[in-house]
Length: 403
Image (cartoon, rainbow, N blue to C red; front, top):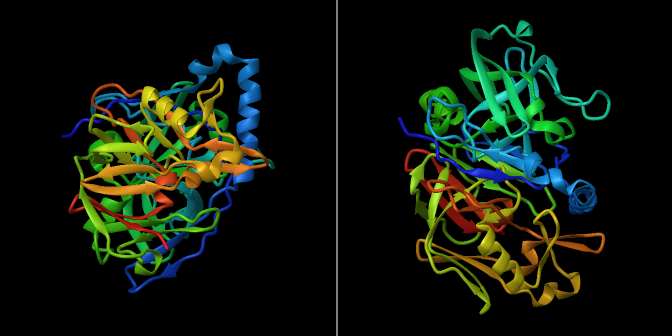
């Protein structure tokens, strides 16, 4: 079986608190289902940036240790994943019979489903940030597994055990007997999880990087013939609701035709990136690998290149490696262009900035990944510009400009 790629993630952004609507809409046919996605406001994001900066100045010596995350190499080692502090979009799923509802991050950068169980430690803060918790004793469709499940994070582990139950996506897609993890202790995610309003994670990458080679929810939906097409599609609203569509896509959300790009690896949703440019001031010289990751809000690239890119657009770093720019310069910021399979994909300069309360964050972060891992992460900042269709069988990603 395929091996997970190894890379280190240094997540700078703290936990996001988002409100999710658990509504469902059937689109085109009964097997095409839409789940609304909501994101937190720019005001909250900037406020947390200011708080992080202040805290970092007070405790800078502990910063790197606290923020390191890894992915290990090899199917026999548990996948070590990002801390999800840098995720923005959440939606609702249900587990069991009768259904128990959970807010989850739909994450194209991982492959497992997990939710907290009743009695979970370090799973939310009562009254302030409570979590929905799964109770298998209340589900008639629960099937015991009991095998140990553990993910190691830089600050500790997230552990529990495997179980099997039915997963409902909106109201139309019921995946029978899905193997997932009941989490007993989420301490390894720290405050990013405790204060966040998401309960769990639903991974939408490939089974090749799934812990214990457990088939993904989406792969099982395909095998159980629950979808018209083996695709799911993201439309991310700009400070408004987004949509995740299972089994097809919504042509009303984009202009022109979809342009499909073949994956370079069916692990994460990984593609080849020819180059990145910003006006006449910045251009990469070597092709690179990139993953399209709905579970990361910002754009991520090699530290040295992001530093040069930030300088080219007039952004300056702070102690945490985040960049800010003078809000008065937004109108003159150059577009940032990604060349993928011979086509240009543009993030307008102003759209590469998160602005609120007189502060403008440059939405790029620098991270250096070891060999074998992706060099760039195209996160939600990119996906807000392009309707994105993920085809599991063809191993392609389709892009079209959003309306």
